[in-house]
Image (cartoon, rainbow, N blue to C red; front, side, top):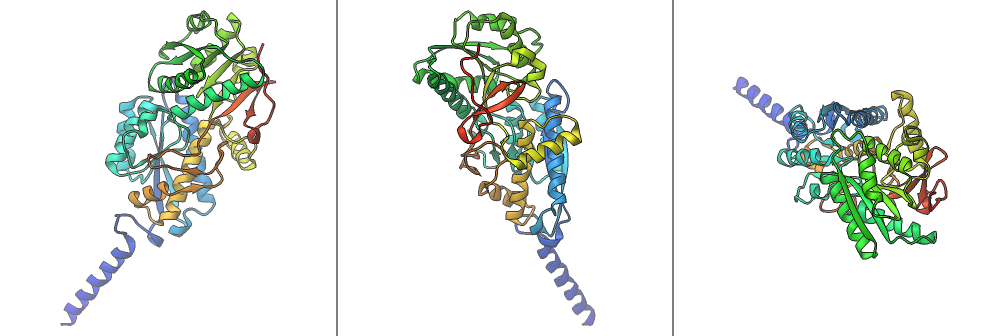
Length: 407
């Protein structure tokens, strides 16, 4: 009888311990969690390795900062552990790497910079029931699948193309140079096409004529031909959507060919608001305008994060990396709010999140709608002046006054 009582007591104690350590969703809570793994997936090799590595380093820095600040307080100071993945810039590799990160225990993912890669990773996240917080990937279609586990901090393609167009037309009108015709150069694929389509719709409603020139970013080493094609339409403004290497070549070709335009203007452009662009482009950068999401250069906390990043990694922290840092903060707050590392409950906490002090120049907190899109994400206008990228609109984020037209 004593043996039976002892066995019963042991079983009861074991059951109680299991109940305390695991919640109904399969996650852990309270003092039973020492470490929580999140995954960061970016292109660490290939043509986009520069920006991908920078974003991965931003995830590392964010995890370090959050751990230094005490970890997940609700989970008794549990530390975050980051596992990184390399998409190699391809959708298929991104998909397999996302699955590997999840199989290795990641309860949430951050990534991925490219829209086509993010499409595949979002499908993996949905199938696995693990939340994905998109740092950079613009294509509307990613969140049009009805997914419940994917969230995006930055503006989508429609809002970037639409808001970027509105900003340009307002700038021109306010400076007495209304626009009749523009030429739009963009890279092929979902990213460039989706932003262009949104801009074209906005231009049509504004009565502005648009011509389209596309290019393949593969082996794109000379932009002279596409710039000639765009300039041949006699536009008031040439617009560009593309990644850093190709956009740099386009800016240099515009400077060399010197067409009669009022401005070179980027929308969702990977170069024109990059800290390295003025030095890399030289005189070709002067006066170049850009409408894009951007870190809030007026915020002291952002200034501190960027300064420490540059000291640690030896390069400026660009907006894409700030978005990665922000995505890690979103996941950390969700872990606090959920008080468990169960992916389903972390997902629900992200959906209900309200980040009051965003690192980006957004007019309002980060709040996700039913599709997973940040409702307050927006673009701001920037311009290269005196070798620096300045924020020129709207008023609350201005660091300098705009110069338009640019001659």
